[in-house]
Image (cartoon, rainbow, N blue to C red; front, side, top):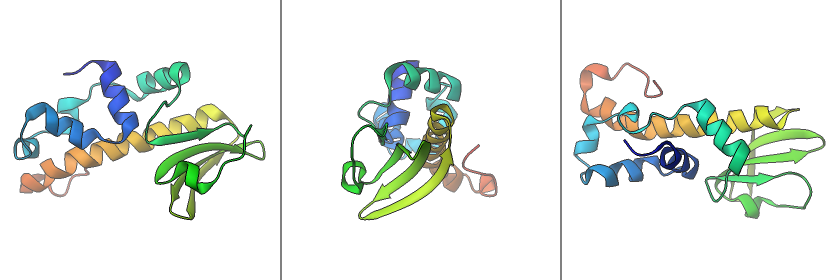
Length: 143
């Protein structure tokens, strides 16, 4: 298993499936692997990393409300932004803003983003496994 820092960075990047596929050098073999076969880092460890280092160049656009921004700054990314003394978690698409959640504390917004990124990673990895193993089709891909 890769280092925790590498696991955190790949979850923040939103490219977990491609990263996992590259590790095993075979798309067919990935049908027999799940999220837990590649990722051991916890939500808490990701949160500690983000608090210390920020989201960096990732699938997340962050704006603390000190400068103007537009939909185009955060295109096709999860966005965490402060507006009117509240922290918003949004998904920004082409000329579309979908509000996901709102909170008074930045920490709550960061945790919401991290939960969403982890769920995206779980879905991208567990869906292939679930489809390849028909007896597991009724279980959730987010487990």
